[in-house]
Length: 312
View 1: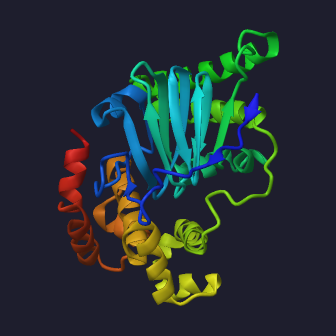
View 2 (view 1 turned 135 degrees about the vertical axis):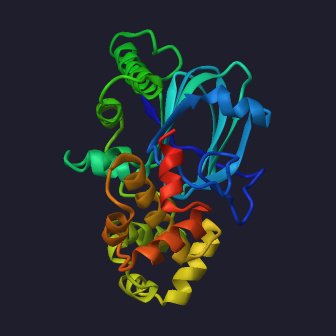
């Protein structure tokens, strides 16, 4: 198997300010409470003339598994023409884009990066091996040979297992999805070569600051720390942090914290029986009325109304 060193892109360079999406073409939508999405590559790309223009995701990790067909892939500042079977992994904030052949067959799995990191945290070295931008492919002519065919088959079976559970309605679906996703991560980890020590999402200073900032938000959002407190460990001011977020994500640093609070509130409303007051207190809001006003401003619904919608 090849871990491709993709050639530098010399034309069709992405714009200086890349759009950040939830899923491609869904700019500005509130993130769903589900932490994983799975669809065929054709499902979305056929509506965009088979071209997914350069963009990045603020908090999502993607796995693209191509069974058959050709694609020109851009990952960071490099592009590569390739054919299935192959797999690409794209962490949050990494610029990427694709031009697919119309006969492409494959699957794209999109998972909340913080959820995947937590899932892999119990296996030493697995997250470091899997959660980086990478292209893994088999040399032409090798797919039908012994060990290579076994590797390709194991990867395809793991992808099918995730897809089956995502579209299923069986009992303990979330647990089954976690199990299938962990199986896929283990297969990817075994196939991928050891990391080289290169940064996972580009070397631009603003991107590095935003990556570290998002990790701190993930760890501390329930305490609602000030931007100054979050900027201090980065060695920058709150103003500089805000500028970096606008440059990389297209919105403010406070928006990152607020989005994380809203996502957790939506999860609690959808999947627990906690009262609105209890949810607000758990997210650092000392007053239920303030939490309700915050949630309504961010989502357009009161917490109670959103819970009723989620239950439909």
